[in-house]
Length: 539
Image (cartoon, rainbow, N blue to C red; front, side, top):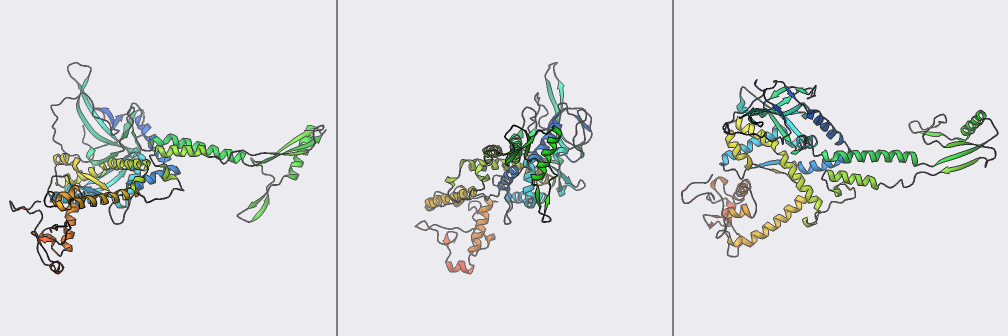
């Protein structure tokens, strides 16, 4: 096969001797094609591509609905928190068994990933785009003459113009009807004009998989293999709500006003003269004065008919003569229970608590035990969305680390599961939860404070009781050193317990430092990571 556009990492083949009869999972929405086809074409026999294009257009259409847009904004604001003092997402490397130097390099590369995405400014829009479309594509632009510079630019790709393909080569072994999987080749098909199906054939440029960042929603139609958006469940409720609202408007406009019925006595007049007499009476008594708000004038629009016109009916001699009656307007026009029902149905399909959509609802600051079950479910739903969104950072980070020679592909396969991401939170549930956790941690710390140094180490308490990360522990130790007047480069400060379990003053090698020396900046200090047995410092 011809060379693909873009770049591809060379991986060590460790499954040469293995035989498989089942294709790889298609949980990313990729289309399966037979190997050995044309370079620039794939065959779409079941019309999946056209269906997915229609779905994307439909998702974007319903996202413009006011109720849906309000729910989406609520979800996005919970998922991506904008704060001028802290970045929206940070990387957590506590579980990585690597030296601090390597962790610092990974942290720096993650910061460069956020800069490439301009995530502080565009994070809300990127997350919203992924949530609505159900998929996200970026092209990783690198300098092929100097790949060690890493990813130079990230360019967004419309999901209607690109498609992931798995080209599977099969062979028949032993005359069996079941074919074995010989080779699987992944690539992306791109067409600037869109992947329109023409006779079942799609044409485009084949792109190497490592050149593309692909983040699917994780929702897939198991029957057809389509990647679905989180708005898929809202398609039917949105259409139902639109229909009910439109019919309600039409009914109220046509049935709300009262109309009069004029019965005009025409006597023995012939039909033609009776009709002329009826028109003369109608034009004589009909009042069609209107007010023009733009000019401030009152105009007579008698020549213009309206849908709310009164009824004028002739009545022959022998009847009750001329009569005027009133036709009542529609009843129960103020009832909107059906509208509320479909609105509630729509909000539930979007996993948004109904209380957030009520204009009368107030923001209460109580205990976390007062949080409703819907709020708890909503918080867990947002957390799942964040997990599904993190491959965006992981893929770009891997590319940068491998191209710049920080790690190898084999190292990445071992460490990728240990990398975690921490999203900034400012929800009122999160604030209440954090305050109560802090209170419980302080209570536990007071209970075991007298045992620190005998049964529990200071570092164990920081990690397991206070749930502090390595970076937080290091930063906190530096701050303690700074406040004590010690140089952070000289090592940590031990804080011994007094007989009553209350810490008094910092110490050096177990000897308390007098307050005067602390204020004067005296003292040196030893590193808490210093190992007295071997005389080495831990990394």
